[in-house]
Image (cartoon, rainbow over all chains, first blue to last red; front, side, top):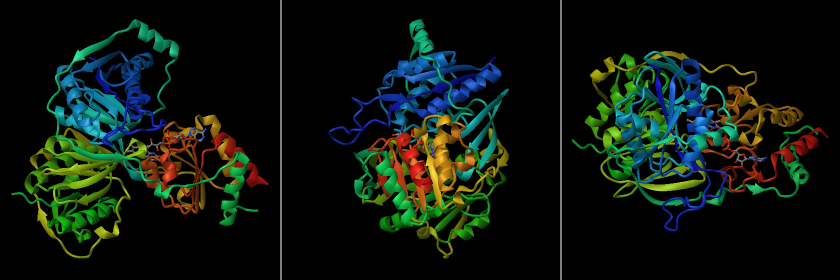
Length: 258
Length: 321
Ligand SMILES: Cc1cc2nc3c(=O)[nH]c(=O)nc-3n(C[C@H](O)[C@H](O)[C@H](O)COP(=O)(O)OP(=O)(O)OC[C@H]3O[C@@H](n4cnc5c(N)ncnc54)[C@H](O)[C@@H]3O)c2cc1C
């Protein structure tokens, strides 16, 4: 039987956008934001597809029904080579990791995976990261900040990264949960035509998961943007004028010849 | 027994307690003093490292071969056993690999709320209040760790290490290794040291650093030209390295190298907390980013929103002539 890899994904606000807060300032206002696939989930999907390429593993991508633009993300994953995609309902649209982990755990209890690969973190995580929470719910071993996953029978060999570029090679027996930092290669590209094809074919499977018990969560007092106290002095003008100012700054410190 | 102390999970190389652990211990001491409790350290692996933890009131030591190097499952087992016994009111961990592995798992297993990406912690009578960085540093969240127990994973460099270093002696509690360490589902195969790079970016006076804004390997040529004109090396943010456009030895940040050049010129880097960890103490930081709201402008000394593809050639010209 091929290894069944499940890749839970999340849609997160595009950080290039201006982020607004809700009127009570305890959350960000998601209403007008653009959402993109969490970049570390994209890395996890790529690593899953590399394992599939090497060993014929089955790759199932799963998202939560309430996530904005989740269909697009799931069809894109199919266009990239995932075998199937599942949309889970049963959560209440919470963006808290503790709530999401309970929903994904509910799904994975019903349809177990040999290997869960998901992003090491998401930009809007506040109360923790998905991989360890999910593993704790499921009672599985887990490792995060992983670059490179090699499947061999009932185990995976993975590389866990530390500061300064040190890393550990670990062997982990399956089933297990791995938090991916980076795939061995840049995420592959799915042509629009193939994404359209996947959309036309439909085939997102909808599953109702009964969430496990949610862990304790935090009380948010307020959210705010970092004070501009230490804001950079902005250099204005066209490219040439700004270049001249930067050159002066360097020259003034003796960091430029001439 | 409710001890209600502030605990720190120590990290070390086997010989040396990490700088980050002293940062946490300094904060733990401050919180403990405010709350009228003790600062204790969970130390896994070689027990003699307790000698380096004079800043703590108590060191709880679990020494076992499976804990000599960091191994997620072994550490989690040991920590669960220690937490069940010591019952601290708050445990502090690094928001790096160890904390990213263990913090969220403990939140479920030990049933305690977790604040991640924490940059500040203060004690109030009813709660410890944490400030967390989210959305790549664009938003800060002030959260309460009320209740009887809590977990915080703290960003490196958030607190001074000096406050956690002390020559005092501390009580060492020897704690028996949990039985689970004999039946782990993972094992360490080898420790891989970083590859030597062609250049040492930590030794450069000036760095030209590029991020994802460069948008493709081919575009690196223009930046290289600027670096060559200045006679300095290129460095990069993580995505540029992950994409394979530059070698790992050029990566600045939490999982790369810490640099402190006289000038750090950055193009198309947003200023995510993990990048800032590696360069925020540079003497002069000049950032080019088309997004006026990019977090890097809160850290840089000078900034510009001119497009990097216009600015870099113009600057290269200035430098050459
Ligand atoms: C455990 C862990 C460890 C990590 N370690 C590191 C690390 O060591 N180093 C590191 O850097 N990251 C690290 N990261 C990743 C980090 O979280 C960020 O994802 C990363 O720093 C973002 O890189 P960036 O700024 O280049 O890309 P982005 O955040 O995508 O920013 C690109 C920027 O370029 C700007 N831009 C786009 N086009 C132009 C243009 N034409 N002209 C000017 N500006 C433009 C955009 O406005 C944007 O702000 C780590 C993450 C994790 C989870």
